[in-house]
Length: 219
Picture 1 (spheres, rainbow, N blue to C red):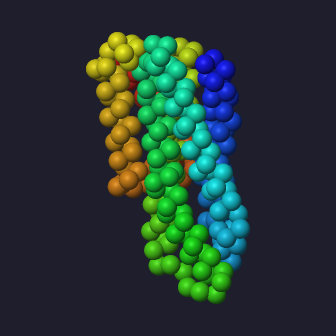
Picture 2: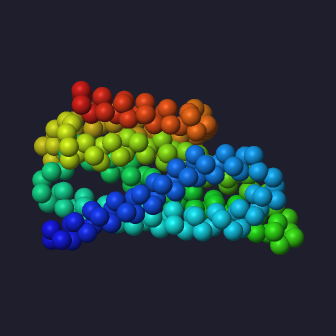
């Protein structure tokens, strides 16, 4: 079991780097390029570059999630499941679901629309709405990424708050979950707001990390 747990941990790192690295690429680099690119360049990118990048992105997310489940089960067995890793794992799970249930289905619409244009046809009128929906979920995942990684690390290095099994009703856990779920609700039904820009989402992610850490540590 130690070998299985270590291989899962190693895989979790590798697949997580792939997933989050591509998340940052899409939000910090590709988005700015697409905003400045010509229509012809956008069509070329969405038919040749983006589909390949999204393949690694979504399967990186899937394998990160699956190896994370193995690690979570090992932590549960050991009795080390605390509030930190519970908050971090919740955010990671929501990020995974955003990829497969929101980002990828809507990006498929955008890709198909651009493929139609490249073949001499018309763009899908629903492309703009699909792109906006995917962007909101992607920005939310970027918002979640820093606190998620923070709590994954703090759960092993300086755990905050009582162990989850000792206190399921810990105020810090409840408040943190309410904040996270409210932000996820915004990803599904809300607006970009302050996470519209790269600078805005980075600053917001740092602030969210500090807020959640304070909530978990002090309540």
